[in-house]
Amino acid sequence: MSSCLYRSLGLFLLFSMGGWAASSQEPLTLREAISQAMGQSPEAAIARAGNEEAKSAATMARTQLLPQVNFAEDISRGDDPVYVFGTRLRQQRFTAADFALDALNTPAPIGNFAMRVSGSWMAFDSLKTQKDIHRADLFKESSAISAKAVDQHIVFRVIQAYQSALYAQRGIDVARHNQETADALLASVDDHVKAGLAVESDRMSAEVNVAARKQELIAAEGELELAWAQLREAMGVPDLQTTELKPIEPHSFPQLPLEQEMATAAKTRPDLMALGQAQSAQATAVGAAKSTFGPRVSAYGNWEEDRASFAGSGGNNWVAGVQISIDILPIGKRAQLARESAAKQKIDAQLAASQQHVRLEVSQAHIHRQTATLTLDTARASMDQSAESLRILKNRYGAGLATITDLLRAEDAERQSQSNYWQAVYGNSMAYAELLFATGILTPEAAEELQ
Image (cartoon, rainbow, N blue to C red):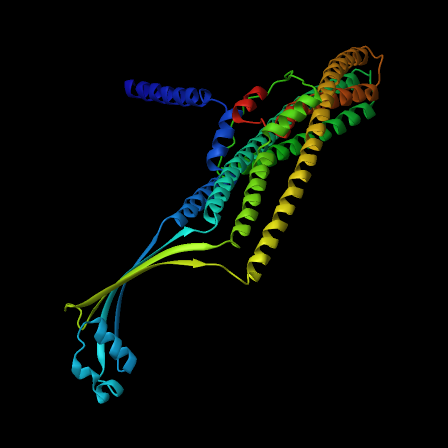
């Protein structure tokens, strides 16, 4: 008896703790979804890799300032007369007997173990190296700014997907409410038919209405699954479990003049800033191409030890010098300069086109923002009016003063007004997010204003 009591008590505690743990699970907030996306999205990983690549390129450009030092161990053997003569000299094994004609013309094969250490350094190249370094630094800055543009794109996509999932969940709530209303209406019509206050066709109409509401609920559930698939893709978490989302309630967002929003976009849009840096980098590339026509001054040196055997002793020698060179037929350099100049013209046009496109995006976002605000106000008033109209018609139908057709029309209007209202709430939040994205200030912190 007592063991059964303890077992029952244990099961009760187990289920109670499980229920408490499930209920204590916090809903996924928009900021948490954005944070996960910033860490796991493939787009963010691509941007980080590109940024590291640009940093490495900047570091590599600076290596041109350093001297080049090489070490080599060369093993050779042969009977070429010139090779034998020079090898004996370098090994410091040349004797008077080596001047014999037979020894000079048909020498015996000789081997050589040569160890060389050589170095070179470009002392002056008409400032081409300095311009290459500056260009690499500008591209590095451009890549870092481009990564910020990718981050903002990720934030915007997560907001879209998150809002879509919330709107789909609202759609299910509305569909379930409509189904419950349709079931209650069918029961009411059935009572009226039994009481002789309604005809059989009224019941058939109510049954068709119930079936239509069930179809809407099924469609709403499918929309929710699709919205969650889009949210998983936007966050870069394909195995994300469907969970509760923190609702985004209706908000009243600040409104600024269009001119001020245009000025903000011109200063803060990361894609424009990245193109500006790339434009400066390409201008530097044109300067570097021009520098190739100038003189080059380089220093070089070489030390060599030659031995008859690997571990034996031998002779050593060194040579050092300075070289001044000028390309007197720079056909390839002219083509390179023309190529860099064309690339500069291309990026100039890209920047101008992007500036025009950004102005258009800001204008569109500003208009969408204004329209969304007015739409939300209208949808809220329409929902209140349709709810009151449905209440009145229900009372009139109950008193026999309205037909089933009038009631179903009022129910359709009330259902459509609810759907329009939540669509307006979604559209208002997305219009504000679109405006933040268009002006270049959509950060994870700014996204918190939506929730």
